[in-house]
Length: 229
Image (cartoon, rainbow, N blue to C red; front, side, top):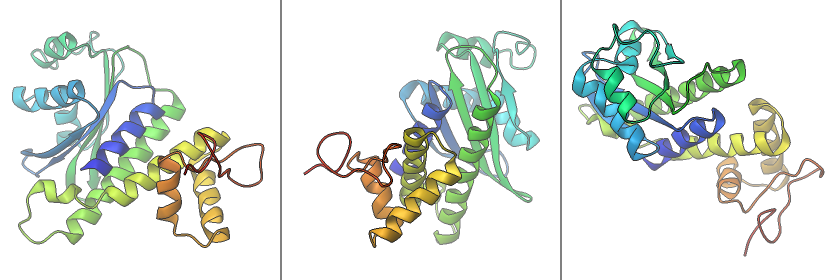
């Protein structure tokens, strides 16, 4: 589950959020495995399934994103028990995205904020990308899991993909480019150095490899700017 947790952490950072979580759910709404960035996000995620109401539960049931920029606004009538309980934990805004493909629903991805406010267009785009990556990793895990495997087995195959996406996000920030361009730069470096893309991603996440916008190629050397010994 460490890979999915890193994916949630990268999502929270990209969207200036206090936390994020991915929950695997059965078609009947029964909750399976859950991964969150921190204890508060974990409690917020658990809360709505204990109470039977909340943005994540609604996103899963309706198959549509549920975006709540101000929890203290008009949600009391919608979630009369969840709203005050989540507010007591410091939650001010929550954005929930169903993880689904076709008729199949696998779970929900949620982003939490301790301040109210809409997601910017860029943040919403990032949220949809992270939700897509979470869905893809769950599908990969489901495809590789034996029949009857428990829900937490679905998140066992996320390590490589989550690390790759985290590295992609780091390069995006370092160079001020899009996610697609960041991946292209990583692939070009892997090709030039005869390395596997996963190995490049691991070096970036470990901060042993950094892409410098002022250089034509990544820096490898001492300290934060490069490869450590």
